[in-house]
Length: 264
Image (cartoon, rainbow, N blue to C red; front, side):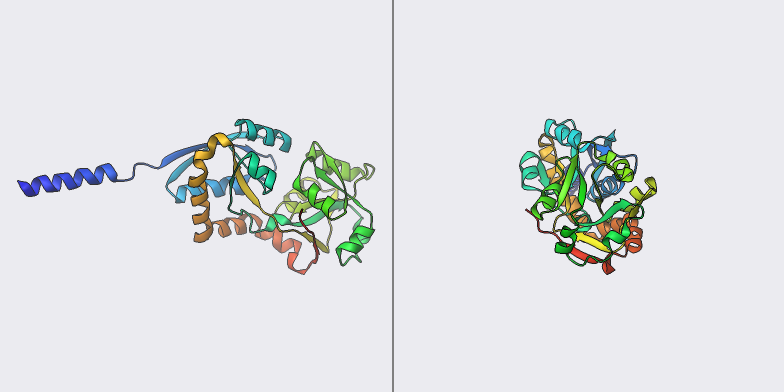
């Protein structure tokens, strides 16, 4: 009888302490019609799943960066990926795990067709600066601070998705649009009247991280732990290769002339 009671107690103790069905995590996040969100959503989904959590998204489509920033501050949006900055670290809850292995800090230029000869003899930042060209950048993008810090001309555009047509027109005072090596090929397919500059890669030491709304701060340790496991297990690299290997291969990044930019 005593043995039976002992076995019953051990069984009940196990049942009480055993992990329950996967904890559900619900997040509101942005999607974009060009599919540029897909890597970040799948990384979150699979990282949390690998760590025993079930993620569901409440998707909000095609919003501007200004809207995303304001909505994250107000808690209308749960999470988004941004370049890490001190200001964002104060406004939101940072999840300090780099998301692209530094790819987003390597930028190549979208330029109007037939503009390539302008760039053919450039070998360093000083020579590029002497061209006196003007970049188009989204309003309040971190890139604007980088371009200013390196004494490069730029215009900030509130509705940044208008930049493509502005660049195509050749009469809006902008000469090029720097894009991450993981972003530019899908964008070129949508804007075939532009082309990719062939020789240069602009590099600075920053990466995307996820930021949570402060109302979701309780999820920070769960997501951070899940992303660290995804990085260490190779899941992150697998997804980076799946989504962006073609881009890196076609852009021939390793053989481009590096233009090194300082960050503020």
